[in-house]
Image (cartoon, rainbow, N blue to C red; front, top):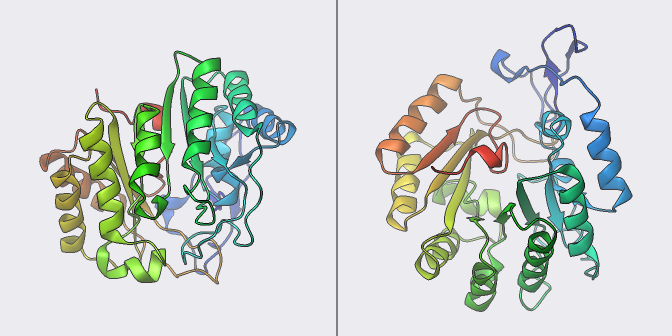
Amino acid sequence: MRSLTVLESPHTRETDAPSPGGGRLPSWLKRPLPAGNGNNFTARLIEDLRLETVCESARCPNRPECWSRRTATFMIMGNLCTRTCSFCSVPKGAPEHLEADEPQRLAEAAARLGLKHVVITSVTRDDLPDGGAEHFVKCIAAVRGRLPDAAVEVLTPDFLGDHSAIDAVTDANPEVFNHNLETVPRLHRIVRGRALYQRSLGLLERVKRRAPHIVTKAGLMLGIGETIDELFDVFADLRAIGCDVLTLGQYLAPTAKHIPVARFVPPAEFDSLAATARLMGFRRVVAGPYVRSSYHADDMQPH
C-alpha cells in the first residue's frame, strides 16, 4: 500500500491518485511525502544486502516516511507466503529455501541504519516443520551479537499453534512479541484464510504466561466490516490474556483484487476507540488511519 495522495508543501510534489482498491481517499488519508535522501539510503542498503521488507512486499503506505527516517521492518524467510489471506499483497507461491547468512545480513543492515529497535517479521512458512521458528531465533541472536543494546521486536505468524515453535522464539527473549489478529472473529475466515482467532489468542497467551516480562502486542485493521461491539469484544479477549500493546489502523486494499474497504474510519473514531482500550487496561494503544503494527515501533512500547 504505497503512499497515494499528498498535500502540497515546499518539499513535496502534489498528486491526487485514487486508492489501489478503487475510489478516492478521504482528506485525512492525504499526507506529505518526506524530504531528504534517507529514503534512497535505506532502499540502496536493503538492495545491497539482499533483504526483504514488509514495507515493500505489503505495500505499506508508511514506507516513504519510515525509510526517510532510516528504519524498516525486515521480512525474513523469503518473499513468498504459503497462505493466501485476502487482505495481504505479499506474493504467494512455492516457498524459497532459507538462506543461512540472512541473519547476519539483517544484523548488518540494522547496524548500518543505526537502529535502536529492530523489528523482524516473516512470511508464513507452513511448509517448514517449525514454521521458521529456528530462523527467527537465529535472527534475534545475530542482531543481539551486533547490536547488544538494541531492543528486538518480532512479529510472527501463528506457527500453526505449535507450542515448541512458539516457546523457541519466546525463549530467545525478544523485548516485544507481536502477533496480529487483524480482524474480529466473524470476519476471520474471509480475511485471514487458514488462521484461527483462538489460535492467535492462544499464542499471545502462551508467550505472556511463559515470559511475563516480554511485552505482548497485537494489531487490528479497521474498515473491513466489523462493528464497534465486535471490536470491544476483541479488546476484552486481548486484555483477558494480558496483552500489553494494541495497534489500530485503517485497512487499505492493496489492489482491486483484494477484499474491498467497507468504510474509511474517521480519525476521531480511532481516538475514541483508543480511549476505550486504555480504560480497559492496555498499557499502550496506538490508533489512527495510517497506524500499522510496526509503525514507529520504537515509540510504541509502554513505559
